[in-house]
Length: 105
Image (tube, rainbow, N blue to C red; front, side, top):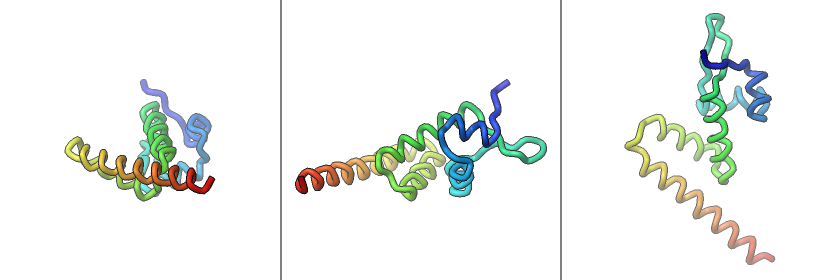
Protein backbone atom coordinates (compact mmCIF):
# COMPACT_ATOMS: atom_id res chain seq x y z
CA UNK A 1 0.00 0.00 0.00
CA UNK A 2 1.20 3.49 -0.84
CA UNK A 3 2.03 5.79 2.05
CA UNK A 4 -0.62 8.41 2.73
CA UNK A 5 0.17 11.72 4.40
CA UNK A 6 -2.16 14.17 6.09
CA UNK A 7 -1.85 17.80 5.08
CA UNK A 8 0.22 18.51 8.19
CA UNK A 9 2.62 15.64 7.50
CA UNK A 10 2.81 16.64 3.84
CA UNK A 11 3.57 20.24 4.79
CA UNK A 12 6.52 19.07 6.89
CA UNK A 13 7.79 16.80 4.11
CA UNK A 14 7.63 19.53 1.46
CA UNK A 15 8.63 22.49 3.61
CA UNK A 16 5.45 24.33 2.66
CA UNK A 17 2.76 25.59 5.00
CA UNK A 18 -0.68 24.04 5.06
CA UNK A 19 -1.94 27.45 3.90
CA UNK A 20 0.31 27.27 0.82
CA UNK A 21 -0.79 23.71 0.08
CA UNK A 22 -4.45 24.75 0.23
CA UNK A 23 -3.67 27.71 -2.04
CA UNK A 24 -1.95 25.38 -4.54
CA UNK A 25 -5.01 23.15 -4.40
CA UNK A 26 -7.34 26.12 -4.96
CA UNK A 27 -5.23 27.16 -7.95
CA UNK A 28 -5.42 23.58 -9.28
CA UNK A 29 -1.68 23.03 -9.08
CA UNK A 30 -2.13 19.97 -6.88
CA UNK A 31 -5.06 17.64 -6.46
CA UNK A 32 -4.88 15.57 -3.30
CA UNK A 33 -6.87 12.37 -3.01
CA UNK A 34 -9.70 12.13 -0.48
CA UNK A 35 -10.46 9.35 1.98
CA UNK A 36 -13.91 7.98 2.86
CA UNK A 37 -14.45 10.96 5.19
CA UNK A 38 -13.46 13.48 2.46
CA UNK A 39 -10.19 14.33 4.24
CA UNK A 40 -7.40 15.14 1.83
CA UNK A 41 -4.28 12.99 1.77
CA UNK A 42 -1.08 13.01 -0.22
CA UNK A 43 1.25 10.33 -1.58
CA UNK A 44 4.89 9.98 -2.64
CA UNK A 45 3.81 10.99 -6.14
CA UNK A 46 2.48 14.26 -4.70
CA UNK A 47 5.80 14.91 -2.96
CA UNK A 48 7.61 14.58 -6.29
CA UNK A 49 5.05 16.78 -8.04
CA UNK A 50 5.34 19.55 -5.44
CA UNK A 51 9.12 19.30 -5.76
CA UNK A 52 8.75 19.89 -9.50
CA UNK A 53 6.43 22.86 -8.90
CA UNK A 54 9.01 24.34 -6.54
CA UNK A 55 11.66 23.79 -9.20
CA UNK A 56 9.53 25.72 -11.70
CA UNK A 57 9.06 28.48 -9.15
CA UNK A 58 12.82 28.55 -8.63
CA UNK A 59 13.35 29.18 -12.34
CA UNK A 60 11.63 32.53 -11.95
CA UNK A 61 8.28 31.43 -13.34
CA UNK A 62 5.34 33.50 -12.20
CA UNK A 63 2.36 31.77 -10.64
CA UNK A 64 0.40 32.38 -13.85
CA UNK A 65 3.16 30.75 -15.90
CA UNK A 66 3.26 27.77 -13.54
CA UNK A 67 -0.52 27.41 -13.85
CA UNK A 68 -0.19 27.58 -17.63
CA UNK A 69 2.51 24.90 -17.56
CA UNK A 70 0.37 22.64 -15.35
CA UNK A 71 -2.62 23.06 -17.69
CA UNK A 72 -0.49 22.22 -20.70
CA UNK A 73 0.98 19.16 -18.99
CA UNK A 74 -2.50 17.90 -18.15
CA UNK A 75 -3.36 18.01 -21.86
CA UNK A 76 -0.69 15.44 -22.67
CA UNK A 77 2.49 14.99 -24.64
CA UNK A 78 1.25 16.92 -27.65
CA UNK A 79 1.82 20.08 -25.60
CA UNK A 80 5.54 19.42 -25.11
CA UNK A 81 6.51 22.04 -27.73
CA UNK A 82 4.31 24.65 -26.02
CA UNK A 83 5.78 23.76 -22.63
CA UNK A 84 9.30 24.01 -24.03
CA UNK A 85 8.48 27.42 -25.52
CA UNK A 86 7.16 28.61 -22.15
CA UNK A 87 10.38 27.46 -20.46
CA UNK A 88 12.44 29.19 -23.16
CA UNK A 89 10.55 32.45 -22.54
CA UNK A 90 11.23 32.23 -18.80
CA UNK A 91 14.90 31.50 -19.48
CA UNK A 92 15.20 34.47 -21.84
CA UNK A 93 13.59 36.76 -19.27
CA UNK A 94 15.97 35.54 -16.55
CA UNK A 95 19.02 36.02 -18.77
CA UNK A 96 17.83 39.55 -19.59
CA UNK A 97 17.40 40.31 -15.88
CA UNK A 98 20.91 39.05 -15.15
CA UNK A 99 22.36 41.21 -17.92
CA UNK A 100 20.45 44.23 -16.60
CA UNK A 101 21.86 43.63 -13.11
CA UNK A 102 25.38 43.32 -14.48
CA UNK A 103 25.01 46.70 -16.22
CA UNK A 104 23.97 48.34 -12.93
CA UNK A 105 27.09 47.11 -11.12
